[in-house]
Image (cartoon, rainbow, N blue to C red; front, side, top):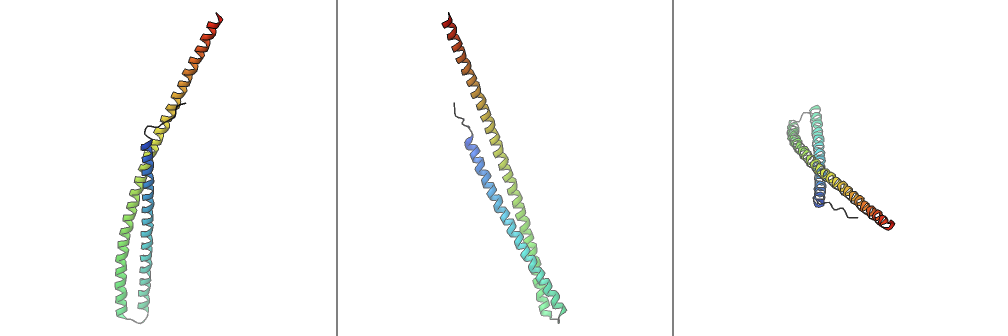
Length: 151
């Protein structure tokens, strides 16, 4: 029996490698997003501590220098929060883009796998047809030689 050889096997293997690269890229982008989320949580936590410290300063004896310092620190942290939210949105967009590329790579790989499956099915059908043809020829030969022997 003949061996099945898919003509575009190298393309299928390339698509599988590209898909794997896109999966790794997606995982890296996901890790970057998680890191940015953690940084945002840390900045928000810092802001909360500064706000609480400001409330405590206002409840105790009034020290205008410390209150102003607290106010500046609060403004600085608010700017940090804005910057971190921007970084978080960028990381989310990068993740979405990586997801889209990964899904496209997966679709391309699946298309090539389907093409390979169909090529294999055609190969099996051709092999079966060849077998039937050989069996018919053998049967005709055997039947023909029996007729010749019988005369």
